[in-house]
Image (cartoon, rainbow, N blue to C red; front, top):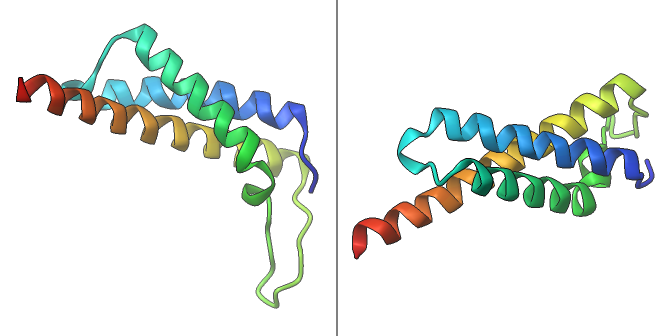
Length: 103
């Protein structure tokens, strides 16, 4: 699988959505809609740039490479971006909450 701009866009938008979903689930670690949006977009873009090819590496039980279909590509890239966006939002939210309660 090669690197494409379309997959970068998919992961960037999915990172945005993942950050907002994580913010809805983690009420104590929210830090504003603009902050969630920025963190999700940046995390999704970074995962799309660096993890795109690795996320699409699919092997069979015998170890041979398996070419994913177009639908598989969009689902894998979308889930990767969403998970990275959610993890980044949760991590930054926890850091900001710890800093806020410490002072």
